[in-house]
Amino acid sequence: MSGDALYDTIARIYDPWSVSVREDVGFYVDEALHSGGPVVELAVGTGRIAVPTAMAGIRVIGVDESPGMLAVAREYAEREGVTERLDLRVGDLREPPVTERVPLVTIPFRSLLHMPSDAEKVRALAAAKALLQPDGLLVFDVFAPSREDIEETDGLWIERELGIFERADWDQRRRSLVLTVRSDDRTAATMELHWLSAAEWNAVIEDAGLEVEALYGWFDGRAFEGGEDMIWVCKPTSVPLDEARPGR
Image 1 (cartoon, rainbow, N blue to C red):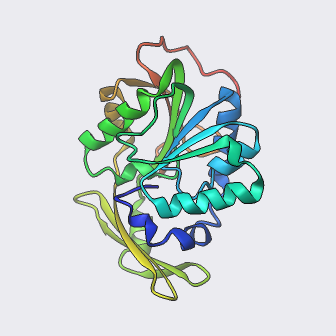
Image 2 (cartoon, rainbow, N blue to C red):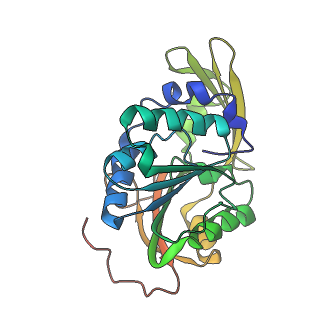
């Protein structure tokens, strides 16, 4: 994830904070294998997905604004012996420092929610589209909270993992979330996320010159039926839309 290098502050607690989030890793690795690579991962963070992708034999170009997060990713790649397949670059996902054209661009872990407006979301998606080969795919995931999730977490400090706490302050009118993360030693960061409905995401995707090939409701490939999670698979509009996505 990115956001004005604010993740530098929590780079060393990011993986412990997100340790229980594993369901997306296999999904993105499978997407990378299906594409044949190389893959550009925008908002690559600590390499939580990029390093397993490299371990599967696919070359990854990873972009993130946070040098601290990228330092953790390099250490992870070194431990797993895949540094030669992981090219990490400091940069904004709206202006990625990438000249290569690839069959797959990914923006995992809800990172697009850092974009504060529809215009900035369009800008980020258009920048990702520009990195694709003509028949390439862009895959990203986002969420829109349920009323129950908001009611259960709003304004509360919750120990998400041992010694790591988060607080969610929701604004339903603005559809924004101010999320604060801190550890026992008071290492902390505060970020603001901005969500959209599925229909609004579809409009943003179209404005970026993309069209939807698939929309999943979870990382197991189930159809989206109006839940909180959305996994979008998009292609450039210049490529005719197939009747159905090939089986995975």
